[in-house]
Length: 134
Length: 186
Figure 1 (tube, helix red, strand yellow):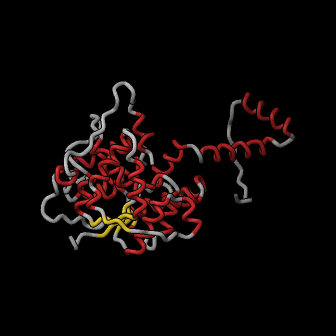
Figure 2 (cartoon, one colour):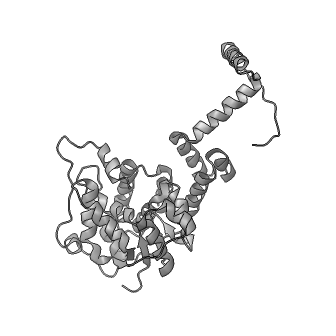
């Protein structure tokens, strides 16, 4: 975090500011320090929040924000993953080559392909996610 | 056969390709077979460990096990390789045996594509770092989009399959949507 500072003015509910001052007094820090700490905590918390991460990645894919912004918020690891994934969109998988027709399911599976049915009343739709996740 | 692109896939890719085929619920897409198609249009290679992991997954009667059964029924089409080498320590650490052997094999064979579905996690970074040429790294949705674009599988099927995966596997929907737009929108 840069040591350079910028001044921020904003209006907040009186009650909240009073509360903040009380808390700052108890902690023995300034109101400004309390606000800075609170803001930092909030950003750290958001960085691990899945919904927020999704929003950041969406904005990045859409080209609305730069890598540096993603890196600052999500950390280098996540940001690099997103960058690799976004870069991969510019590449094209090798050409599929089909010699003649696709085999029939019968030929491919040497019989009917296996079939899975949820057990009556035992399985919910959510079971799928957990049972097939890696 | 010989002019087909030589590719390497990991365990999850094979299971993911088979899942909509074996899932008989109405939410699963119908009218295509991603497993059969990928194994018929590419020259697909796997390390022995991948077959081992699929055999392991095949025990039981849940959706995953049934998908594994389907893959095993089609293993004739896979070229299996013995791999006993290891990737460098820090990379090996985060990946399972199937994945790390698949990367090793892809490097060794100079494969034209390595397909992995690790794209939701930071494992994607590890795979990317470990690959000699990271430009050969692709994902199942990307490959399916390519097949849809070429109409080897109907683009309607691919579209439905992508929605199915996003819903059931929590795949990054924005990434999948980008692919859709690139390949399936005319």
